[in-house]
Length: 606
Image (tube, helix red, strand yellow):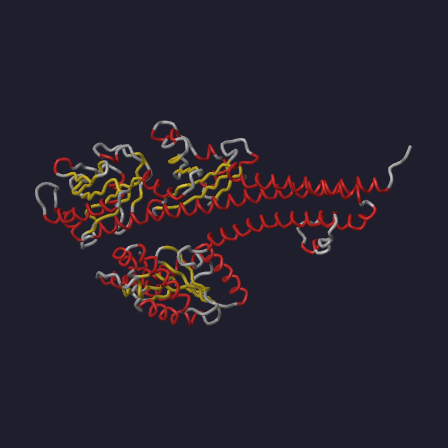
C-alpha cells in the first residue's frame, strides 16, 4: 500500500492551516467587532443619557429662575401683603399681565400662582392652562392653599430660595388641564422691602410635556426609563408601571434592574448594563442609567434616568461584517487548498510566511514579507490575506474613530469647543497633584457673565450662543499657553492658572479678562457688552481639593457680583471681609447697636 507522500502531507497541512487560520481570524474579528459595537453603544447611550439629564436639570433651573423673577417683582410683595383677591386692584392687574405673559411663552407651565401668607394661603393671582389656552381664575374661584406642603414649606424659606416638590400626580380640584397630570412644583418666597416673607410664587410644571420635548431628538428605537429618588417609575415603556405609588402598587427601578440599586443609595452616579448574557428585564438590551440631581439644596432631589437600545440593533453591523468574513474565509480556504495540491513542494517556505501572517494578522510588519507581487497562486493567497486584514482594519479604524469622537463629546462643550466641567476637574486634580509634588501654587478663576441673560432674553438664544462662542474665543486668546479655560455651563466659565506666578498673576489676569469682556462684541449687527464678575481661589492657600477650590471661587464670584458687577474678589478677601463683619457685629452687639450687613458678607451668605 502506497503511503501518502510529502506532497500530499504538505497539501493537507497547508490546506488545514489556511482554513483554520482564516476561520480563526474571521471568528476573532467577528467577536471583536461585536464587543466593540456593544462598548460603543454603551458609551453612546451613556453620553445621550447624561445629555438628556443635563437638559432636564437645565429646564428645571430655567423654571426656577422664572419663579425668582416673578417673586422679585416689587408689586408682588405689595399685592401679597395688602390684597384680599376681591374687587379691582391696579397693582394686581398689572402683575397678572406679567404672569399671563410667562404662561403664554412657556407651554410647559400648567399653573402660575401668587399666594399670600394671609387669609389661610389664599390665591391672589392664578393662571391655569386649559387645553391649549391660558385661563385666569379670579374672585370667589380662588382657593386657600395654606394647608399644602408646597405652600407652607415655601413660606418657611428665606427670600430668593427655591422650593422643589416631589414629582406627583396633580390631584387638586379645579386645576383644569393640570389635574391628573405628572407635576413638579417650584416655589419661591415673596419678600417685602424689610425682608419679611409675605407670600409665595408657585409654578406647576407639566413633567410629561417637558420629558416629551427633551426626548424629541432621541432615535425611535431608544426606550426611556425615569424614576424619582425612591425608585418609583415615572417613565417606562409599559405605561401601567408608571406612578404606581399613586395607584396603590409601587413599581421600583431597583427591583426591575437590580444593578441600579447603588444609584439610589448614592454610591454610584452611573450604571451600564449589557444584556448579552442576562435573562432578566435587561436581556437583549444595552442600557445606561445615570443619577441626576436637580432642585438645589432645598429639595435635595434627584432622578435616575435610563436609556435602552435593542441588542439586535446594536449588533446589526456585526452580522453584516460576519457575512463578509465568512465569504472571505471560504475564498481564502479554497485558494489555500488549491495551492496546496498544485504547489506543495514549492510552498515550504511560503507556507511558513503565510502561516505567520495568518497568526499575526494585525501586525503590520508581518505583511511586509508577504509575496504580494507574485503572479501565481501564492501571490493571490497573500493578497487575499492582505485584503482581509485591510477590510477588518478599516472597520476597526472606523469604530475607533467613533469612540474618539464620543470621548471628545463627553469631555468638551459642544457650543464653544472648550473643555467641560468633567475634563476641567480631571485637569485640576492632576494640576493639584503636580503642584503638591513641586511645592507650587495654582489659582482658579470663576468667571460669570453679568449681562448674558439680558442679551439672551432680548436677542434670543441664537445671539446668546454666538456671544458665548465669542467670549470663549476672547478668553482663550487672553490667556497664556499653559493656562486652561473651560465652560461649566450656562454663562459660567472657569480658568486654571498654574505655576509659581499664579498667586501674583491671578488678579492681573482677572482684570485683563474683565477688560476684555467689557469690550463690545459685534454680533449680528449689534454691539453687545457682557461684562463679568470673577471669583478667585488659590491652592493651597484656600483649599487642597479640586471641588473645594471650585466652590470657594464660586462663593467669591457671587460676593463680587453682589457687591457690584464687573468686579473680582479673592476668597481670602472674602474671608477677611466676613471676619471683619463678625467682629463688627460682636462689637455692636456688646454696645447694644444694630449692624447692617456689608456687601461682602451678604455675598458669602448667598
